[in-house]
Amino acid sequence: MAKSQRTAVVLVAAGRGLRAGAGGPKQYRSIGGVPVIYRAMEAFSRHPDVSAVQPVVNPDDGAMFTAAVTGLAHEPPANGGATRQASVLAGLEALAKHKPDIVLIHDAARPFVSEGVISRAIEAASRTGAAIPVVPVTDTIKLTGESGHVEDTPDRARLRIAQTPQSFRFDVILEAHRRAAKDGRSDFTDDAAIAEWAGLTVATFEGDVANMKLTTPEDFVREEARLASLLGDIRTGTGYDVHAFGEGDHVMICGVRVPHTKGFLAHSDGDVGLHALVDAILGALADGDIGSHFPPSDAKWKGASSDQFLKYAIDRVTQRGGRVANLEVTLICERPKIGPLRDTMRARIAEISGVDISRVAVKATTSERLGFTGREEGIAATASATIRLPWSA
Image (cartoon, rainbow, N blue to C red; front, side, top):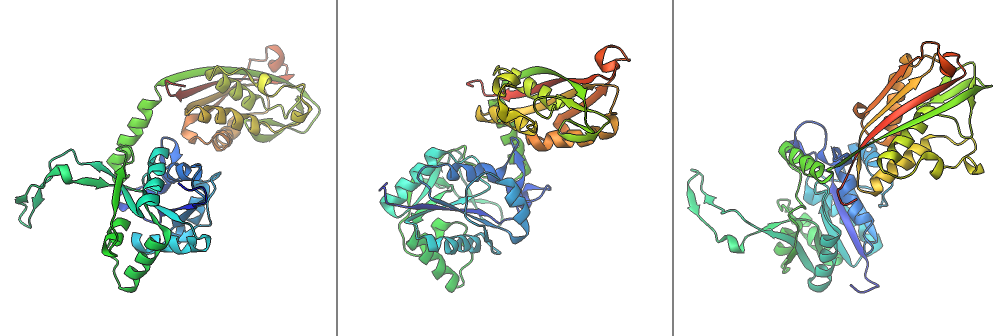
C-alpha cells in the first residue's frame, strides 16, 4: 500500500439483531467478557494502516455504544437507517469529508476479524478497486423449489461464503451507493452486490473461518465455548493486607467510603480490601506483589486512591490475553459493620475491574475480640483471585 494512501472503515452497528434472541442488540452483548462491538472495532482502531473508523449506530443506542467502546479511537457515530444498505451509505457520507482512498465496510456482529484479514482487504482494494473476503463452502449445497424438492446441486468448488470487511476505492463505492439510493434500490444484502449492480468487477481474497457473524443464540454459545477453551491455564492467587487505625472520620474499604470514628494509617488510602485483591491477582500472574509495583517509598502514591491499583492489576491480566473468573475478599474487623455495605462493595469492585458482579464476593467476619482486630486497632483482609490465561502466556 502506498504510504500516502488513506484507509477508513465503516463499522455497521445499527441493527437490532432480533434473531440473536433476548438481551438487547447483539453488538452490545458480552462475549468472552468483552462487548461484541468492542472486539470488532478494536481490530481496526489498532491497525497501523487504518486512519479513521466511522461507526454507524442506531440513534437510540448512543449511551450503550459509548460505554461499550470506551478507550477506542473512532469518528463521531453516524445515525443508521432502516436497512443495512442505508446505514452503510450514512457511514460513507460521514467519511466523505476525510476523502479516504480506500474504505473497508465491516459488520459489528463479526467480532473476530483479524489483523491479517484487514491487511489483505486493504491490499486487495488497492490493487483491484473492489474486493471481498471469502471462505470455501465445505458442505454440499442444494437448490430447492417452492415445494421443497431439490432442483439442482451446484458445484461447490465454485461456491464461496462472503464475509466482511468488504473493501473498495472510496469514491467508487460511495457513488454506487448513491446511485442505488437514487434509483430506489434497497434490496442489496451486501456492498459487493451493489458494486456488481453498478458494473464493477469484484475480486476475492482469503477470508478466515473464525471471522464468523454472530446471528443466533447458538452462535453466542458456541463462540463462548471456543473462547473459554483458549483460556485453559486456570490460576488462583491469594492476598493479605492489614492497616492500623489512626485519626479520621472514614475508611476506604473495597472502593467504598465508609463513615467511621477513625481513619487508616497508610501511605495510600489504605483500602485493605482492594490491596489484598491486587496482591491476589498479581500472585495468580506470578507477577510480584503490590509493593513491588507501587512502592510505599514513592511519594507519588501518597494518599493515592486504590482503585487505580486494582485497574492496573486487571490490565496486567488483559495484556496477557486473560480473563478474571472470580474475585473474593474477606474483611476481618469488629467495626465498621460490613454487612449493610456488602453489595455496594461488590458493585464497586465489579465496576473497577470490569467484571460482572456475579463474579465478585465480599465477606466479613470478626476475630471474636481477639488480637489487634478484636481490640479494634485496625482491619485485616484476605483475598483470592481466579484468572484464566492462554496456555501460551
